[in-house]
Length: 291
Length: 247
Image (cartoon, rainbow over all chains, first blue to last red; front, side, top):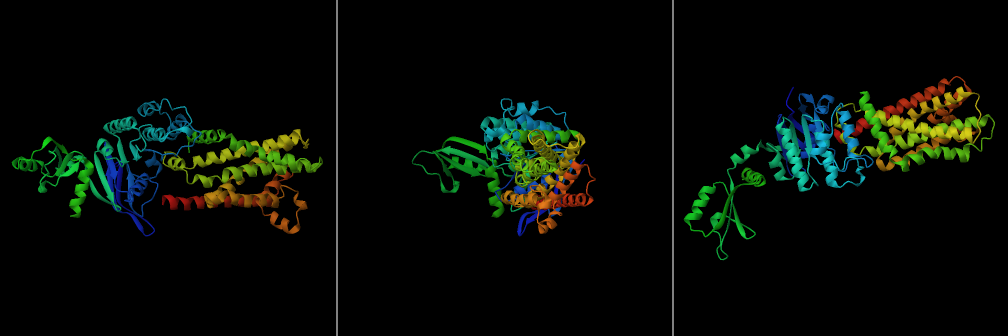
């Protein structure tokens, strides 16, 4: 049995537009991969090829060694329907029962019903469901029956904070038990909370690929925050930005930076030093590569 | 395609349909109503009454299968739920089988109403019980090509075009096939086209079943050709659609 996802040299064009050009990507068991990129970067096309909805022009996608889209590949994977994609006449129990039957039956609904708080909704028709409620049903469908590979496209769009938290816990528990998970998201904090590794796509190529740990280590950047008295401006070399009543500095070597601040007797107060947020790291890597 | 999956698909399709009475009640009632207005009275009580009833039974099956179940396929192409179904484990054919089966089932209901009306209100007398059984059997058989022809049209047409186009095809077909008036009354030129239509073939088969005659080979052939063509067009159009959307 091969890797959960093994995609090699994917190329996909739509007429003159090269949506994906030579993208390779893999996912191992017990791993969560975040797929990032601006709109139009080729994320959706890539995901569609990985799931087997679209065939690449050249290159190949294998899921556990099976061709993407084949019955054998589909038997291994769980996918969320797109939001707002349920027939109004059905209840969550009916859709879940249907999905369980398609997975071969003998699958209890209790796990996912509990994980996504569906108990109060389970026997109501979905016609009047809010966006968040529909989303919870969609997530439950992806995890139903513990498939060994789960695809999630913008999983928490429209979810309230409690449901987002529940989703993250479920996703982490799933990965901890050996599941493989791939998700796209615009929420950086979600990617940080759920994923082990990210692949960043831009203009149809993977521009960044690595574990979050490696990426953080590579960028030993810190953010330094502090306050200054009203009449004091930060020195030019510090390149500090105002943030409300405070100042913020991004630095590759926070130690040296702090030493110089002390040496110059800068009158700072309420000092904080924190690791850079993932989104700032990625922005810096982008700047460095362009420079 | 496992039985378990087929059962699940059927349950799903029937649940969605039955919970839309605004859709299926008028659909099932319409042919019976039309028969009550134009078929039962006009044909008198001679042998013509039986033929008229058989024609409207065919019309019922055609209307429900072709129009309501086949053509709606066009709308389904854009449906995210159907897209998701494609990604589930199991057979991709089973959801189609279930929908055709549901189409045939509702066609049967519409036909049963016409026959009931014919027997109870129209006082149609057939030779014996076997004639009723033969008529039901043949008409049900016609539901399959009817549904497939609708599916073909729905697969080729765009979402907005499907319903008007279906009107444009369906009503002339019913007329040309001699379902509304006996084919003997059709002008000769129209009759020359009529013998090639699927509706005429369905009608002729139903009338022969009514009389207990051997089924006419020509019309069996015509209907088989239409069925194959419809299945072929559906398959090609769906394949083309898959390439366009999923290619």
